[in-house]
Image 1 (cartoon, rainbow, N blue to C red):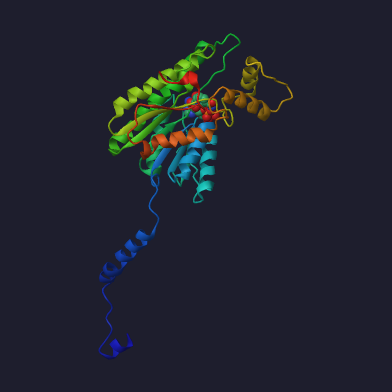
Image 2 (image 1 turned 135 degrees about the horizontal axis):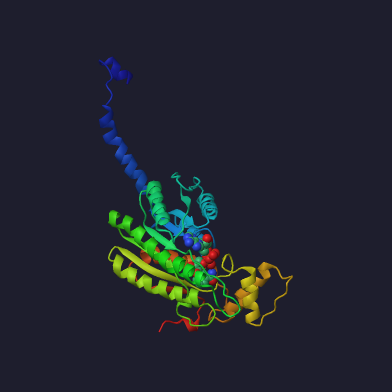
Length: 326
Ligand SMILES: NC(=O)c1ccc[n+]([C@@H]2O[C@H](COP(=O)([O-])OP(=O)(O)OC[C@H]3O[C@@H](n4cnc5c(N)ncnc54)[C@H](O)[C@@H]3O)[C@@H](O)[C@H]2O)c1
């Protein structure tokens, strides 16, 4: 520069020319040195039922894939708690949402009632505000009303069971499809059913038949939403640990029905363990089934690894011969 000054003055390159020469090459070199992007990075996955059990495990699984996760549940506090856990897990930002709030990070939590169309629509509006769109929806929200000693539930509970387990899935599909139609991109929907959809037994008529209906709903949605949207079912069995569906009373009732020991002084954990081991003993793989194993199947169903699978049921039941599809 001093030499140039002695020759009549230093003139720097115009800023634009310096930028054109250096900036993009440097940026491109930086990008080439970065690890390749993972499949779910920059994708938005909505998990409805994320406040507990299989839904919570699924939200965690999707966060590990680095997707942005919208955690939704009837229990808004539980949904937000899961979102916060994900924020801590992936280590950047905190994802707290809540009604009417649209700040976002790696995860965000919202309350939603899948039986109420306005509530489902409001959820997807918040998703779009927070992240701009949505790539996959996984519904694990479900209702199991324990039956009385004769295996009956009230008429009101019959209706509630179908409302959550069948109509809820349909409302979510319709409201998500409004976004997917506008996006014009590929997307994926998973509804959680149950092995009980195909195993006939007495004592849980409403729940079992609602899950059978949900399984057929999956096939009909797969037809209706093709070709861009894939729709599949995850059919779990007997995930006792972490599920709010197995109350102490239900676990004790089941143990008694199967002739297994039950003491009033037994801890919840001991009772749950005994029931999980009994269920496992009836399967081919002989080991209790975890929420994480269900989450793995949900992840596979929404991932491109199963990009040509739609209208299908993926069963995670430890190998239950009664549930083999015929
Ligand atoms: N745990 C099992 O053994 C098992 C077996 C077969 C099928 N399933 C199915 O798997 C799914 C998840 O089961 P889980 O064990 O994690 O149960 P869970 O009770 O622990 O979680 C279900 C979640 O759904 C939420 N929910 C209920 N009604 C809702 C509504 N109207 N709107 C939004 N959210 C609602 C609940 O608040 C809860 O957080 C359910 O559909 C269940 O039927 C579970």
